[in-house]
Image (cartoon, rainbow, N blue to C red; front, side, top):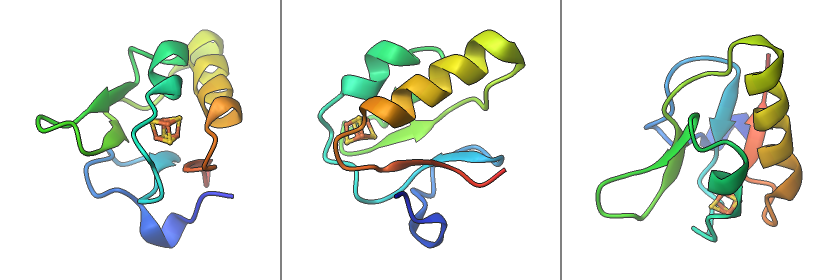
Length: 76
Ligand code: SF4
């Protein structure tokens, strides 16, 4: 389970976040490419946009489900 006390600081404010256990496998980027981004030196993934509406929320949910390190969370 993702840890809200270890959020990647780049996440935009809101319920969804990536924590610091991300291993940069990139699997989540395929599920929610309009929400999740990598930083410039490609050492971290973060929520660049919080999901809005059912389709984006479903994409965020899928990204959470595919993350092998359980680094994606929702504390909303
Ligand atoms: S799926 Fe999880 S571990 Fe892989 S890049 Fe995304 S947040 Fe990081």
